[in-house]
Amino acid sequence: MKKRNKKIPYRTGFNPNKSGYFYLFKIGDYIKYGITNNQPEVRMAQHARDYIRSVLGIPELIYTKKFECGFELVKLENKIKRMDVFWGTTSQAKEDGWRFSGYTETVSDDFYNRWMLINTIHNF
Image (cartoon, rainbow, N blue to C red):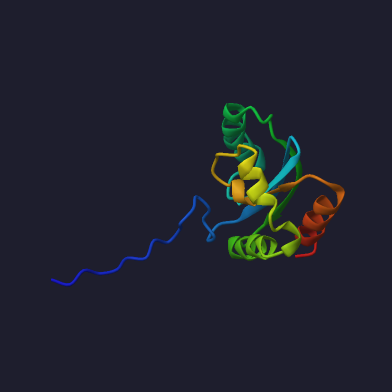
């Protein structure tokens, strides 16, 4: 009997078939960005448990934008991940003790990074 390869529809908790939000949280010296089908405040509470365990502070919501098409959110997140201005920042966050789901979507909090993220999200 031949085994069928089943495709896993979603490798993360995000479902691109539903609407969702792009969010930015400030945590200490970093900005965490990501996508969620939940309200951003719900996602922030989920992250807060990780940050409290790591003693990195409580996340603060600094920007959010709702998208009706979840696939557009996936495209936007991938676009931001490819922006070379952020290369290396996520590895520094890992070295600083970030041990939680989504640390790869973390950049240093400075005016330029905030402006780049908000401008990219707003104009997408």
